[in-house]
Amino acid sequence: SQQGEEDPQALSIQEGENATMNCSYKTSINNLQWYRQNSGRGLVHLILIRSNEREKHSGRLRVTLDTSKKSSSLLITASRAADTASYFCATDNKKGAQKLVFGQGTRLTINP
Amino acid sequence: GAVVSQHPSRVICKSGTSVKIECRSLDFQATTMFWYRQFPKQSLMLMATSNEGSKATYEQGVEKDKFLINHASLTLSTLTVTSAHPEDSSFYICSATDPSYEQYFGPGTRLTVT
Image (cartoon, rainbow over all chains, first blue to last red; front, side, top):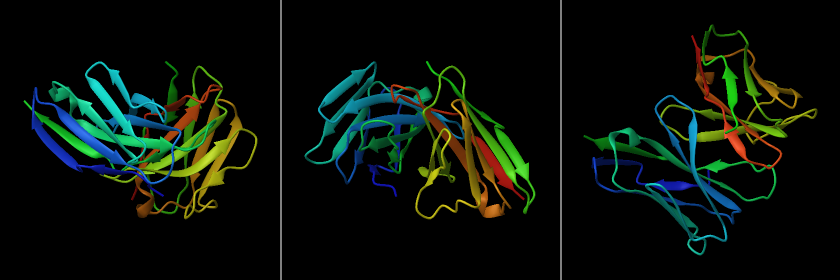
């Protein structure tokens, strides 16, 4: 079952603005990951944050994790038209060959 | 990075026929493979977990007799949708974990049942 809830479900912003997406989950986790999916395509792994980490950066991406609130956020700075995609968080709660539980996703549209 | 392929990328079949989808890890041995289904504008739903040489573990609500999974080698898992119906039309995505438990996703297979 899906345990992740993401908000907003859809987000439309102007190119150059920052985009923030949030993800909440219900059970304790080992890792939380963010993925991007272009329409009709496979998943692209963006970033993984472990349960003992609070913040992580990768290029224009910044991810935060608050395990007390069971939530995470993904910030994309200086957005580009190419960032238009759906973004999903996924959690796993077990070390080893973990199965991922995906959030509902946020459809991000960057307007030129 | 590691690559996972799926074949075919798109398939159209008639109602009542069976369709096989392959998932291969190209440059690593996959201890575990996962199969997901994604309906339009929805998220990925895990269908089953596949371990080489053993029976797949299906998620609740997924019919094991309808979605046959075979994981015959450390680099290949197959999903067969038996007696497909239009409601089985979906995007099927596999993922594979390498020995360090990094998980890599395939590009997906679009199944359309007419």
